[in-house]
Length: 341
Ligand code: SAH
Image (tube, rainbow, N blue to C red):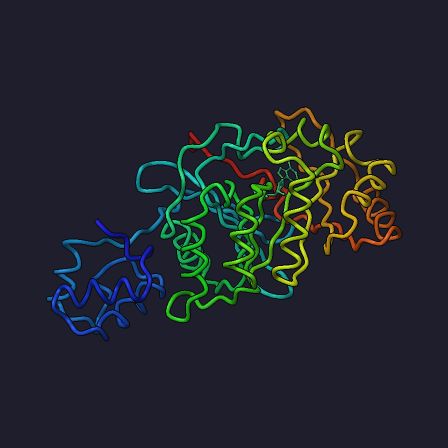
């Protein structure tokens, strides 16, 4: 069976033509799909005969909303969705001045094993399909009644570990006959799977790239992010410079401040020298509490001081606004949920 939330216009057209219907019917079906409808019954301008034929070969993915938590601090909403095979994923809806943003998960679980992050604690269950990523947006819109116009791929999972599905998702999200979200309104965050940075630069030179750095040298980075043993900092930094050259765009580095691990002035200096020659911006995230990690966070004031010292050495830096902390909706707190209560 084919998931219609995973197919693009051309694919849908050839399905429709193969079933013996004129091409323009694909337009109509596609409009309903991206309006968030998940039943053929809703497609009032589509002939019953086409609906019947489609039903035999295709279905429309949708996620079951198990729970919606709303932050009392800032109105951020975190949805727990059940996938059709029973796996659970989380997505977060945030309101910013510039627009409504969704934080999308790319995998159920994650196999990167970063020590400070809750999302990988249970390992990887499986990759999400493009339709399951699209569904997070459509079903979040259905649940909140709000239109979403910005995407950050900063939920559970490593997007570059599920590259092809992520790529198709971005194309569908961007397509005029898909969600119509501008490439520049989409941000992908990676822990640094180096070969994919080049692929991404070539294919998606308008999409924002964020890289989770979190450390200033290989020893420090390898001890908290196992991926660094495979792709050490020299390779990562080289790929970032290539990215700058290929796209002409700036990279955002995410740097989670962990008390006594990477938060002193020596760390700031080393960080700045590591990134010399990379066109970038540093986004500092005071570590969000994840009980199992045993790591400590620092105050926002200390984070601002760290930002100031980095800026004084020549790299723009900001402290990320923390949204949804009271519902465990902040960075690194989303997880593959096994049990619901
Ligand atoms: N796998 C991708 C996407 C995850 S994005 C990546 O690594 O970039 C989520 C961001 O939150 C990443 O920068 C991640 O390193 C960061 N993060 C994870 N755990 C965190 C925590 N406990 N506190 C603050 N940030 C965290």
